[in-house]
Image (cartoon, rainbow, N blue to C red; front, side, top):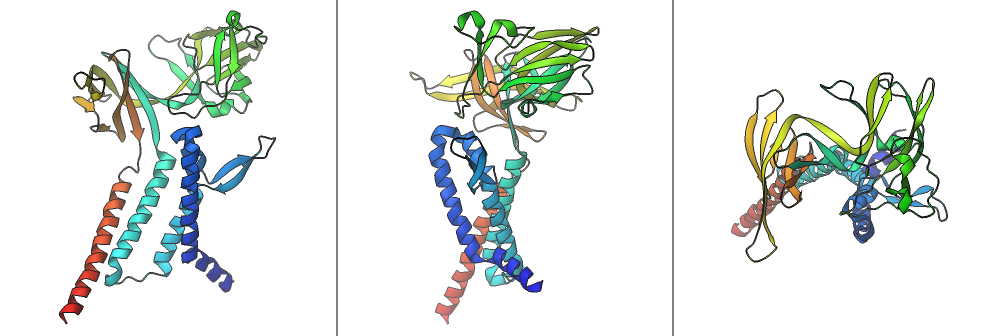
Length: 384
């Protein structure tokens, strides 16, 4: 047993493993760079770097198979390799302090990327001048919501992630008096009035807006300036029988109402929302350009931040390279709409955002220390 454990240890401590992993990293980055033309930045991150394996498909089928180590796999082995080398191979010596500090910084950098990849959440907050929002909305993730609007004082929202719709099963939520049966699901689809689509397939929906609308399936898009618009047919099944089949789509802005057992509901498919314990009001948005050109000079939003507990109520100016940081969130000025009347803020939650800064400082300081140690030793030899 002891020789087997020693071989296992030697494998993870080996410098050969380091070289192989670095070579695989170079190939992965090169491949991902070429694929960015078709997949975009977000698609490349998900397929190559935020995955244990890069997946392909068997020709003629849609069966996924691993074809190359992904970023999590290579990065995880590099992290284990570095930590094992520090534990078993490197000795704590003053003359190697710079190397040890540099390697520690590299470990912190790998940990920071792992934390960011697993925990980072990005969303957007769309604000009209004079408007207020308590939530931000994902640009890529969607959710099916059923909202109980019976009480005029508040709405009770039941949210179901889009990934559950892809399973095409039956959903029974304890707060819903009926079951949801997923009859069909489209990851990306256009919707158009049925009388404008020649030879449209018979409508699957039986109530709401669905019977008048045709669903046109589209291939998934990974471009940065495009967004997938999912759609689904949902059948509501009560104990006494079916309540009808509803068409929901992220492109349908019209609320579809359901009345059942004396309560009123709204069903919709929308971007996933993240609710915050504070409100942001947009007072003014400015979009400045250089005189005589259309080249942007400045984007800025003057907002009012007010927490629900009343402890914080202040005015903040958000502009390029000057974000707002509050409650673990960072608000960046991202875009605008409708002739400078609507501001779009990028909202990022990243618990590991400070780790790359610490890692770079540690690695830079380690290199300086190691160079200084060798320089002092060289000077002493020349003086002797």
